[in-house]
Length: 390
Ligand SMILES: [Fe+2]
Image (tube, rainbow, N blue to C red; front, side, top):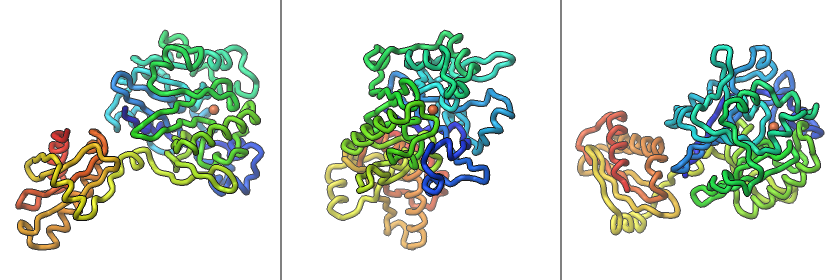
């Protein structure tokens, strides 16, 4: 399984609405407000590539509505769902399934687009998945509190597309096939679905609007939008406790600055421990230090070579480490050796995801050419080298 964070564009919402009864002096410490009292929000989605399917969790706001509509949400940033998919090597046509956590406009609006005077699915090959109870809740006489968030132009085209699939519960066929669990919660809205995934030895919870930003981790810090705030508090308290016990990471959908966070126990309750991006957390390679470790690597490692590089590697290590080497006997000047080492380190970091696509490991990258070659040429050669690692 591979996971990709898909940014779909940021927006702003009223800070008071986002924190309900919590006083501004408290919430503005983590979520500063602008002069109109609005806080910054992302609309981050998660793409799950499991070998058979390419599943997108949620789809952001999209861009179907009028300028007047979007003027209430002050969108900012350059990210779009199409661009973010493309940057990760996918197109909208590659997506086989779109799973909606719920149908508020900032979670499902991007699943459809305007084409002439029609609204059609952006993902023409995808099946759209939603809990039946939530679909009915949003479509059959929605309550006045949520009515403004369940937009007809988002929901009707999904229904008319013939691509919509409703599941009854987590024991339903689709959910069983998914390869990950769904937690259904009822505080924010009826049957909001939270994917819980196992990935590279860690569990990750896609928190949707249960914990929209890192500022919402304290149990009483609830969104004013929740339809059943007391239920949210119970659900959040129980889920955060389980996440803490299991070392589960939270993938935050609406926090522009905290994407993946770990939790810790404090006197005040569960709080954020560390924050990083999905890529940095899972694909960060640490330095390989110590002669003993290098001896182990040379003693039992495999070897591959390309035009300018040589790599000695050991796969299936618990941690991922690397070291670069530029032979002194080829480059007698320290300035040349240091320059090449810097280039090599930068390339390894830039492409760590490709390097680690075979699992964690230890790697030594040795510069084997006798000339100082350009960054771009070394990078090109490095990509060929990595393809031979297996
Ligand atoms: Fe929501």
